[in-house]
Structures are given as structure tokens and as C-alpha cells.
Image 1 (cartoon, one colour):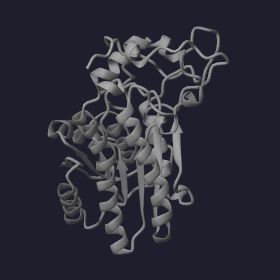
Image 2 (cartoon, helix red, strand yellow):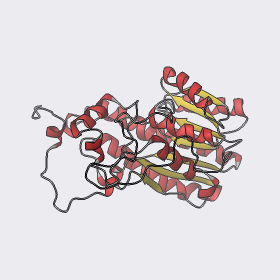
Image 3 (cartoon, one colour):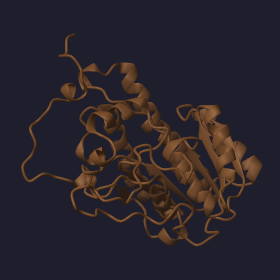
Image 4 (cartoon, helix red, strand yellow):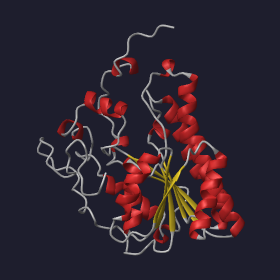
Length: 316
């Protein structure tokens, strides 16, 4: 999604909710920057899953601040269009792409080798955005389904983080990591057991490595997105949004009375990785308009996950 496009639900991020309440104001317009121009000039930023969706939106904000980009994805077709779009962002440095399955530690090492050969340096910033997820009652989740989600979301994030850290430790250079998380790392995620477990592991890595690597100048923080509709959402997520209602109906479920706009997540990522956040490490920032903290005065009736997902009663 380009920063001039609107979310797929039609939200402009600031319209009245229909119940007379204003909600949180809209953010600054597309093309605005949260940090001074050139904040990332001369720096190389590696974004996994950077060819689509929120990963591409985050990469665009680093590009706007002068970064050279390396975007990685398993799918080459996702990278080609993204490279052209990101290179056209005003202020952008060079944009390179790498086909990479982050579950393969040898390929991960090769990507870093290629980056160093091309740019003459290890990436200064790593954004761990790539992940896998799909809704499924826990009792229906197959071993392969579990492995697919955990191997990409947790193990792949670890392989990228480990390679980044080892290279900076060996070179004696500082670095910054931002790992995308999920609020159900704290709350549990009924219907998303594999992803919730994996994201809890990602959150713990943030907290553990901030202590281990802080003395060497390497920071690591987490970033949790809320509802950010975009054109690359999976069919399963689209179906879930359709069941819950879209547009104004979905907005009324958020304390902010609106969904997030992808550039808002990009601004948060560029801040966390920036020189202006050098005393922030081991922290996970949630960007969701307080939705994950929402509680009702009287809890609604419990609806089993199977029912919510439209599944038949479980039978072995």
C-alpha cells in the first residue's frame, strides 16, 4: 500500500463514529515525517516481509528519512513492485531486495553477506516484520500448522536477530532491532494459539537480549500493531473482519473510534530505532489506540472460538 492510499475498509482515520463521539484525531497527512529529514541517511535498514502490507509501510517511512533499504521476502514477486514503489519515496536512498526464507539460517547468513558486499556494512537497523498466522481452534491445529507459524514467527525472527547481533558484536558496532509483536503475547490469543505462543516468545527475546546486548550498544525493542487495514491482508483476516463488521462498525469496536493508518506504525518504528530513542531498549510499544486494554463493565456472553469461526462441533 502506498502512503496515499486509504485502508481497505474506507477509513480515513478521523471521521465521526456515528455515535456523536469524535474518537482520536486523524494523524498528519501522508508524506509527513515524524523525525528530521535525513535521520537515517547513510544507514542501511533491513526489513523482513518488507514487500507487502505493514512491512512495506514501515520501510517507506525509513526511506522517507533517507535510509538505504534492504527488503526481504520469500516471494520475489512481492519484492519487485515494492522496490519500485519504495525507491520513489521522496528522500529515499538505495533500495535492494533479497529473496529469503527466514526459517533457513544459512540463507539468512547469505543475505547479510550480500548486504555487506553491496553496502560495505552490516545493516544498522533490523526490522523483524515477517510472520505467519491463521485463525484456528486449538484442537484443530495440525502439527504442520503449528510448525509453520512458530518456525516463521519465532524461530525465523531469532535467526535474523542472532545473525544481526553476532555481526555487530564481532565488529564492535552499535545496532538497533525492532521486532513486530502482538498484544496477545500478554493476554493470550484464543483462536490463534500458535501465533500467540510465538509472539510471546518474540516479546521475551526483546526483553532478554536488551539486557545481554545493551552493554555492546545493541538495542532491541518490540512494536505491536493494532487494527491497521491494508490491501495485503490475508483472506482469513479479511473474513474475520467481515464477520465482525467493517468500516464504521469496526471503528466503533475501537476505543479510538477509528482504525490505524499504516504510516502511523511506520512512524513508531522509525522512532524506536532512531538516535532519539537510544535510552529505550527492552520495551514493547503498542500502537492500537488502547484497544488491547479495552474491558467492558459487564463482560459479554462467552462465545466459543469454534462458534466464532463458524466451525462445526469438534469430532476426532
